[in-house]
Image 1 (spheres, rainbow, N blue to C red):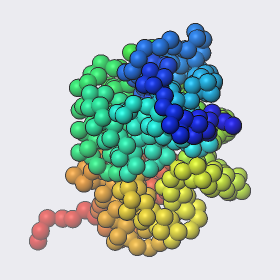
Image 2 (image 1 turned 45 degrees about the horizontal axis):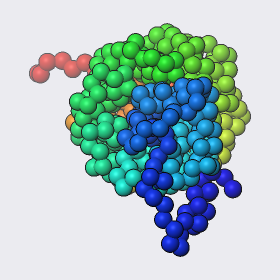
Image 3 (image 1 turned 180 degrees about the vertical axis):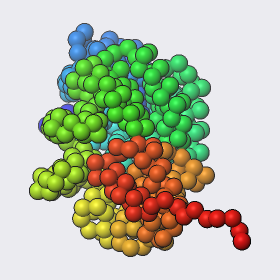
Length: 477
């Protein structure tokens, strides 16, 4: 019998008139599970119940020390913490606080390794915490919200996150996890309110700065985002924390077209934490932009070997395709579908990445169907862009432009300065023979980041060349 199932047997044994005393159900560890999965941060705060000795000194204690101060733990230490709590819960299956810790640790491990097998275990542990923990259990509620964000189930994340805020309105982690939920739903005002609360409650925490940087990036405030993440990386304590913020800084640098700086950030993140696979994939992205394709392929392959993310597979496939290696690209696309199926079997929502794949490398009509459903459920900016592009690929350009405008117009919520989004809008406008706006948006894409995609950046340059310069009109007769 595994650890999570053991509680069911214990609870059955305690029925039939036997009641455990309140003292017998007290928690045995002073930790908590709240997880704000945004900007690569696992946010956990201490349990507010009775004091109890922490895990024995060693990796588990190091992980506990990291997560209870709102920073990500190193993967080996996180694995040790999971093993420690599983062992503890076999002997104390009614310890609600430890179930919350275990569930949140599963969430973070799954997020960092892209292993969907963690999601069902995390959900069962966190729901067990709700059953065995105190009446008001914000730690388990935050963990469930974080799990839903990791699964890209933003309506569910909103439900659990708002319940956590109601249970403990002054816990900054409860507000932090809502940032990801609201962003995925396209609720930009909600994101702003949640960030304001985080910064009010924890203004100087590096983790709060990393959250702010992510929000500022989505608003198009590049300089503010870069300053925030730079400060967060400088103030970070543990190597895993610093590496997470360096990776975030690398993504920001790449998005503004600074290949060399992005590569430096990614390399430093990997030196700081060799398990920072997002930085390894970023390294591949930057190396490809620099024309160092052999090194780029190796970086992507190494990242995918340890973190088989569908997004990385899509990037690697498109890199292969840009090099004329169509068969290798198809292998990656097939692997993407296989990994996405596995993630969805574990409760994740992979419709966005599958829609992107189908739009450009599969069946655009199927992409439209997928993404319409996704838009109806969680209408975020990423989905608006992907749906607009899928509609364009089926020839429905008038409707496509409506969604592309949502993704790129700051007044409509699309404030992020994305070269890919601008490219999509420019190509749709070109198809509609709106040549002036098409030139403007294609130029904008190449100005934001001339290297945004090994496939699409060259296509943007070709489209601009086809459009030529705008006609020069003389004065009125």
